[in-house]
Length: 394
Image (cartoon, helix red, strand yellow):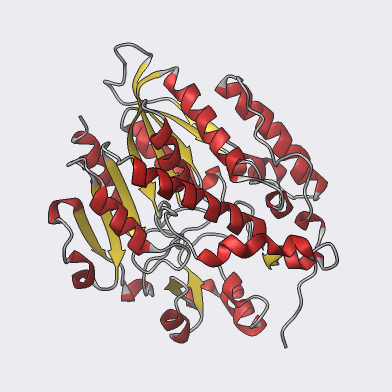
């Protein structure tokens, strides 16, 4: 039997988190203000372990610990702004943040408006508010570093590209599962506004249990529409202005959230010779054709001993030992079964160690109970590749 999920308090806007309100605040003050806002919003929902939830969803900053990080004109030589993905939170950027910190970067990570509180806050947000947050973070970072770099996951990647097209201070990009192209159906996602006052559930693509404390499971149509508008605007700018800064990218060829072919096309057009794409794939020969070998690193994403069938959109920036999303983490991504197959959903949630892992492709779903892969079994090797890229920066 297919259940009809009910709208709950979390599916309404909190009234606290649809606009970017950083203004000219110092970054530490922005972090403090945002943490206060997160605490208020989450406490209204009766969240347990509030401090843990706020810590994972809040923006944060790190200072470099490696030698040679001093700048010539500013306090630090290099800095990186980290931007999470759609429905995600800064938690997803924490392991990358430590990597950059260890490699001499000043690190700042922002929270995009509409995120970290409750899914209903994405009902009214506009992509321009996300862009304001990235512009703010770039400004604060540029006050302290000689060289500004932007790093983004999924939607954060698209926003990083958008900022780099408008800002000559950006010296390079790190993109992870970048959202460069999504379905044109998302353009029509806000047509619901003509009738959703009568049917509130029509505002939603998916209404989920929202078990995850660091990522929304429920997904409103407005979020899809805003993402589509952002990718369209960024694509227009790329036609007018070619990127000539170094770009490091990592993506899954089996990605079902965004079109990985767009990442391949984008990296083919990146002009800087230091640029590099790490592509996780189940078919290494398929993607090598026509791509400059010095710009492409293919990684086999099939690991039978670990029950991993492929990589996934969600499986790039977190290591296997992550306490929440890792191989033995406290959360399993099984929402693709909800509410259509509650038996498989329950089996996936209750016995994650028995499930296969990978992207939620039709082929993988036929193989057995599947949890969407949330970590990168090759994360250590990814860090080596990023380090080589950093060593070759101008």
